[in-house]
Length: 164
Length: 68
Image (cartoon, rainbow over all chains, first blue to last red; front, side, top):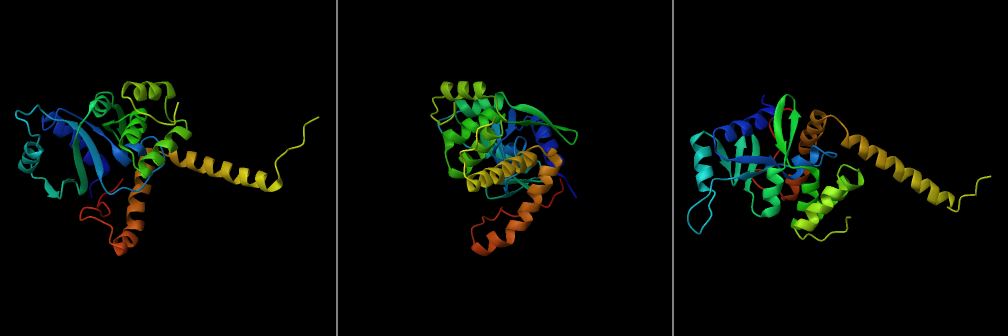
């Protein structure tokens, strides 16, 4: 049976194959690297895609490349070793910065890029949603973040929160 | 000489309980990554029948057929 490490390794291979330019684990799986586990049924991955011509953005070029490589899909999720992975293009300056500044973690011998804790908190406040805020506050309470870094991110991106 | 506590015994007991909870959460947060993934996979399996019965799951929301 496959392991989560196999899925992570595949993300690195997809980057090497230039299916996307860069990636970083986001969402609940990213939180798991810094705080206690919370249930999730998918793996969110922020990515940088090659620039597209035209006024309309589409994920189809990415999906076409993944289909060519033999991956199957379930709705917008790509099944990589039976793990539903949702690729999300970095969609604003905060998500772009989060991908650029992602931290390399080692999972069972596999190097994997994960959004840093301070960006996860900032994203939670920018995106909103009760469950995200609760997870973000847990990170802050556990002292898992650099509060100076977090404050800098919040100010840079004009995010209002109760932190700081 | 120490000042007597101004908190009632009930407040002190509640504080002790919450302090223990904080320690438990911190311990969970500091587990090895692989152990945290194992817990996640187990949570997926444990919650699935309940969530499925409630009809709140999307097609792709199911326990991952993988190991930590």
